[in-house]
Image 1 (cartoon, rainbow, N blue to C red):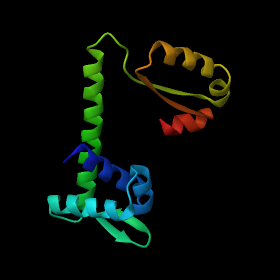
Image 2 (spheres, one colour):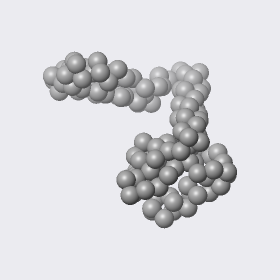
Image 3 (cartoon, one colour):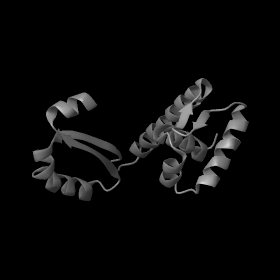
Image 4 (tube, rainbow, N blue to C red):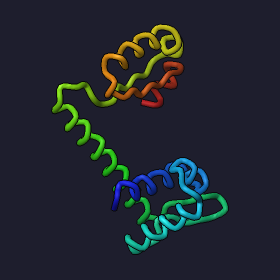
Length: 136
């Protein structure tokens, strides 16, 4: 499977809706449907059951979705490891903090961080402490 096909499977699983997945992937709905049919033909089985409520993964689809997510994650991890071989700082800085910190102190700190390490990505989650604990 190509990276694009893996992203298609992941988006369809996460959105559970052909229209939303098509928007997320910047594809037309008919094009996405055609790509899904090609992927299903490649695997030799239906990956999603289509209904009025949206898309529901089949048992085989669950396996392919897990494969797609694992493969995408492994590719990102490998790219980060390759990037770390250089002298630059790469990767994703993941931060979870209270909303007040995210609105007051953190913006200036992140501005400085981004200017020092432009190749690094930032994943930020703010909210009540109880929400953050649940998300973790």
